[in-house]
Length: 559
Image (tube, rainbow, N blue to C red):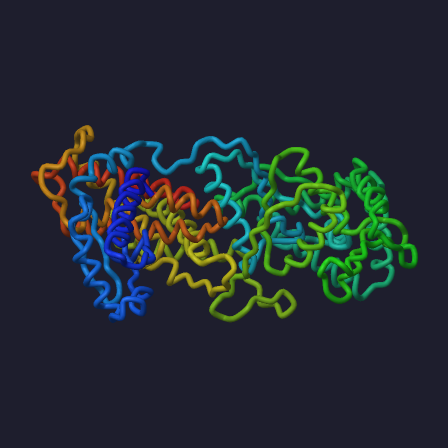
């Protein structure tokens, strides 16, 4: 929250505790961020020792503290004594902070962070089931940068192993589909090669031979799978670009074999005290590492001595920490065990370990998506659908067709991102286009329209923003708006500390709602309080713009 507001609350709380002590009252718990008012004293714990009902305690407390300097009023709701601070007295200091253009932004941090997100296999178009990964990853990156960290995003390209060899074989030997978009075209090559691998022993033998050449470090084979992956990625990258979530860099798994990093990992892990061998394959014995069942044997080589995906993942993370102080991975909930095993291996190598943010998968109204069952909706198709639906809603809006198309793209993609981000990552949810595009309630269009309304007021003002001044007592909707703006720095800090990106859209909705209440209740231009209110509009717009930008949602000036 605002530093000056925090200091005011601490001063009031200190005075309250002094009064409790003077009156031999128990020290009661205090909520500094209550639903109502600015501070709330929770009176349940005092009922037993004082031999009074919680409501009586709350009323007594209200009478005892009402004279404290910074308290304007108190009101009792059941067993809670709620406190409203004297905002007229505090306004100048608090709004002086809010009005600063850097308000809410963190200072520069010494740590650099590599944030890995998406990293989907280069075997075809993205599907909606895992759409949370790039959206969460990109927005967490924006959040960390806003807070002052040096952050770079990276996509780990899995271009070795059976799937990569199958993609390369398919592109070389089968005709692609009719789509103009590269990943949609080439996925047909991959499907045909996958079917052939299952039904034709000669093709299966060829693909597995290629896989062994890749893992043994054959340069020609490594270049073949890398080039095939790049061809598929060219289409996948355009999807991420449209989503405003393309990574800063792409790191190829094949390079870890080519430069010898994987062999270094194998050699180092063989020296571990918990390394064992089984039929020529080496593994870490995790019996004493709180790992259950068959996963207690963490294999890092095949019985032919070649590496596994997990081995290359270890090499990749060692590489990360040569380039950055910290690493953060955005991972589906199905990667929790693998992440745990990775960290144990990194510990054996005396390496730093990454932080992880896990997410549950997105469902659609038709049920859980399944590749095997053929129930897959591509992200590209969903982006087309939501943009088209947005354009349809703009049909009666007075603007040119070109303006409508541009705005519908902003609204559609912004709504998709916002609707994904507003749900806590660990919780699964069902995505609905109608919910995402709703102009009412917790949605991107509601927030975007609020920003457009703020912009409209500032355009009509047609003058430089004056110094804010308080000519009369603040009204309730002004206080509510200022109170919400005062929470922005603490909101950002809390979201960063917990990698809790959903906190930001929750704040966006609060700010948009409080501003619309202010707009409903308070005349801005031409009012005696015009100087104050135009400043409230200007600061609200700046904070809302910053918050939407963290979410990757473009804030339009007109809607």
